[in-house]
Length: 331
Ligand code: TYM
Image (cartoon, rainbow, N blue to C red):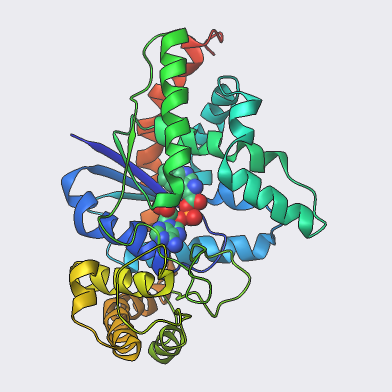
């Protein structure tokens, strides 16, 4: 059976980008078609300046939202990365496989490193090694497919390179995974700056739709989305990034095609209104289920505990095999 692994890092409240780019597909397709594991990858939230209490709160919230969105513990494994030691164990072996040069080429390292420096903060070593830990997350489970948004493509490519290199040097140990992306909305853009990604760690919330935003807040944010000065509704990501972003969102919410939808509108206002309503409808059940689950943290903890147990059992033999293959004396 196909093995799927994916994760969300608890660095902020989950966004519509996380939902359309990743979570929604995990819920609607992946959990039913594969042996799928989904993780709150909390160790990844420590690579930039962080507040411990906030990370803890956001980890629980992310897990709760993943279930509220529809991940069913009977269908898939939901767990927290730091509950399974194998991720960190394997990460070190992969650090001994990766090179400094290839990690420094990672776009996210360059962008986030520059942001940290601009803010006068030092750059943590873990920001550089982050994609290696991500590779460990994936490779520990013999993963075939990694359903992610567009922004993770480079990291999954690195994961493939490390798997191939390790296998060539030390004998076949890892499955070489591939990234999969949704047909539309693989990169949802910020509503106030449609040339940059809608990201949960962004400073301002005005361009970001959070999954837990009230319906009226969602409407307001979408109605105020920055568009260009043209009038015709055309799907062109280069010259009309704001409009293309709205069309992508609407298409993703209605299972439509952004090009065809463009032809159905003769004003930006009407497009914004329909997009806002479609997003509100899409998120409504998630918000409602979240409220129910948040009132029962014991249930969520129980799911996470069982999920970690299963994940540990799956990861340990492969990580142990990697330890032996690389030349470490068995305990
Ligand atoms: P993270 O936490 O930033 O995002 C979680 C998932 O949401 C997708 N996503 C988006 N998709 C479309 N448009 C957007 N604006 C948008 N913003 C986020 C991401 O592509 C991702 O699929 N490094 C990963 C977390 C991770 C991981 C892993 C993922 C750690 N280990 C192993 C897969 C497998 C990250 O930062 O995702």
